[in-house]
Length: 82
Picture 1: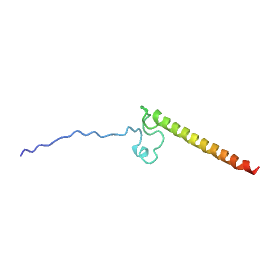
Picture 2: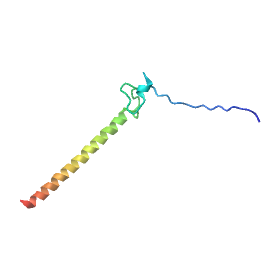
Picture 3: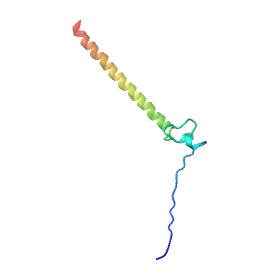
Picture 4: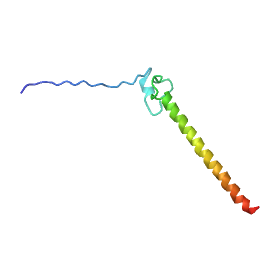
């Protein structure tokens, strides 16, 4: 039996941080840590902002529909009383 050592190539992801690493990694990273988004799917990128906008518009539409239906229901309840 030959004593051979097998080697494997492993890639370790390193966060591209500037400054003190202990201040940047945590539950709420401090402003100025990390890098600017370079792709649409990056944190703070255009795709993430578009999803936020769509969610905001969706909630506004839901609120508007519910509000209009409540007003319509209240008007219909008030008619027979007059």
